Picture 1 (cartoon, rainbow, N blue to C red):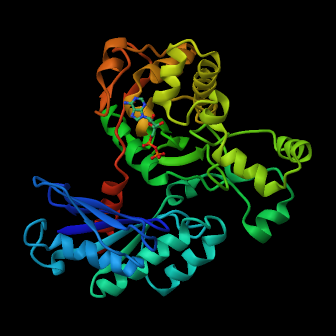
Picture 2: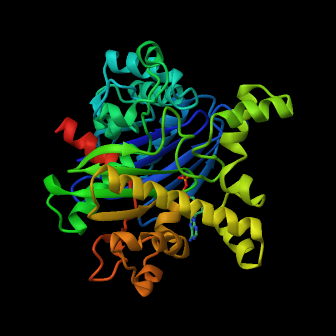
Length: 398
Ligand code: ADP
């Protein structure tokens, strides 16, 4: 059975075609600059050369058709007919409080995604455009929406409520939703398997740290807390986001700099985090290089980042009354061994010891980095959100 996974942005469209028999990727690619001059499709078929097609893509419908044409292309294609695709899984950023799991798309689902656009104004409308373009090109197949927020819907109210007037929750749904849910679901499941835990008696903390980052507490396979909030701004220090901050800072900066709330929020989202603190870059590799060369601001940024992750892990160990396994994932979590070491040095009180050689060894590959006698298993687990979307889609259409 073949499943196409689509991740649509406002001017981009990423895709992966899976053969679900062995969960292999047949082809993947990216349409860029949709609706803008200079649009291009980059197509990477497994076992064949990649190719780039530079052709005008005025809208997502044209982009989807180009992707389908490429998938059946006699030279670069990987299937002989579009009818071989059984279903399409779509990444949707925000499902609000309505969706606790993935769903087959129908009119009501489309309406609900549209209604949640207020929470994710940059993403949900783009996700919907992708769904509608694919429905137009492939009317005969089922389309499944897989939400970034769904995995976190099991959080208890004590974890997701903000201590602000209750009316704002009632009237506008102001609460913690969390993001990266597909990754947290995939990685926590894998962590349970790798650590040999009984799912119904397991306490896992996932540290998804990349350019965007979030931690989650997963008790007995269900999310009980996560660090991102109503928006992705809350929680960890990220590439360009501040993460947790005293809300009073917004007013203080606004007054001092003569800015409005939107302008300050833009600074907190785009000019803060590692970039703001280091003054160098949002990329961990650049900041690490600067720190090695003796740049003190870069060193402060890296240590503040590690400290924030460690504080979340500590609070989640408290929330679950213990922890059995901690998993690192995403760009930094998978590849940056020195950063993992920096974070783990805070975990002595949990009886955690790290095997330095193992930590150095696992970069982009899965493995256990704690010593055999460590009280908690610490692991590197590469995330695979596309595969998780394909798995969820398969489950719903089988
Ligand atoms: P996004 O949130 O955009 O999906 P990623 O998960 O791709 O982000 O993570 C990007 C971050 O991962 C960048 O800051 C980058 O520096 C870091 N990163 C990627 N590879 C490495 C590496 N080999 N060593 C250190 N950091 C890395």
